[in-house]
Length: 262
Image (cartoon, rainbow, N blue to C red; front, side, top):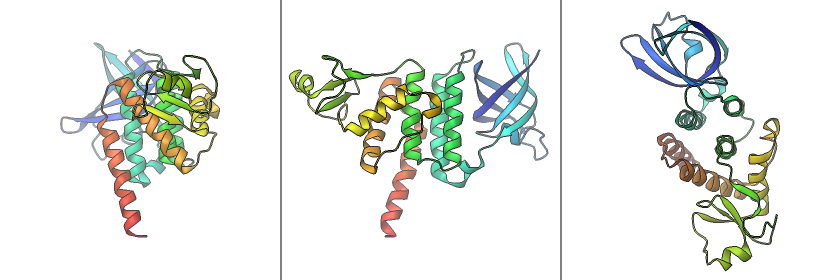
């Protein structure tokens, strides 16, 4: 049975001498694994539309619960991602998150929109990689039902206080009074927030999708936001992402090189 779906390639694996499997993220059916015959031949007709991060229209043949590519049409390839190793590393990390959490048969309209928007912002240099990373991490968790309690302090519901703390391990906020009153101390999972970072967290989780990237943060606030969102996604998903380690190594190497040349 032939079916047509729109999807973005988030992973690929070589198979045999010239074939490969690709995983595509779709809005209606979650992630599908598709066998692409002759994909690694120079003359392969589906080469461009089945490459990593390609957004394409796929005509697939379903046989015995398996999927085989019949034909495909490239819609967008996000060329700008391949101009910088940091961009590639970040895109691979976002793809690994999606591949780990989204299943076959799952409706994933908002997740796919978030992923495509993130690839667009990476490709076009519309925001820094660290900015896109934090936005994706926090909004992705919100979309899959892991939205933290950000409206106010968990104990007194105060929207803002002189001191506010994000409790990574408890998925909530505490004002200073109840944070210290409960005997907590600041550490890597109990993080003091600045007002701008608190507002950014709320905006990422609660804003409309089309406005998601429409805010700005200073360098120090961006560093704090990155620390929070990274810790939150790793702790909620209980997984260490190899692509995250690679991305952080790339950023570390770039920072070291910049210091050595200044």
